[in-house]
Image (cartoon, rainbow, N blue to C red):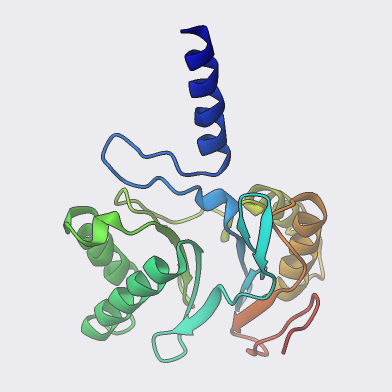
Length: 220
């Protein structure tokens, strides 16, 4: 019996380490925090969203240059995601449909989408986290029905999200730094610390000098 217990513990630890534990609700419970790092910085009239390019499966790097930050809503909304790519893209499509129904109302569109995500039998099985931002608001959307707005205009999700967010909050107190400066410096710090985050960044910006960029290593 002891041998079986030890084997069970080893299997459980392996499953936990790979982020494949099923929750009580039957969801796959994929560990979003190992999938990516996304940071959104808002300063003055500029909003910058930056994501790394690494996709990991367990201890293996599957892809180094994935694009996890996109522009939607006729170029007026930035969106980043962590979790299963297919699920995230499905959710982004649904969000774009809501934005078409409620033009220029990102918060309302997100609330409507979160309701559907929480209650729809198909959507609630989708495994992803979304960060979206327009000229007025930055939001995090979860499958539990949460629509969260940060108090300081900064959002960080994923494996290196806490590191990037902490760095961004510190840099936000420094005069003279733009949103782009804060975003790229913070992500470099996260990439130096987090093994699931690399320095092949994809950046999108709204406001001043809006343009895509790769301040880290470029794969374009």
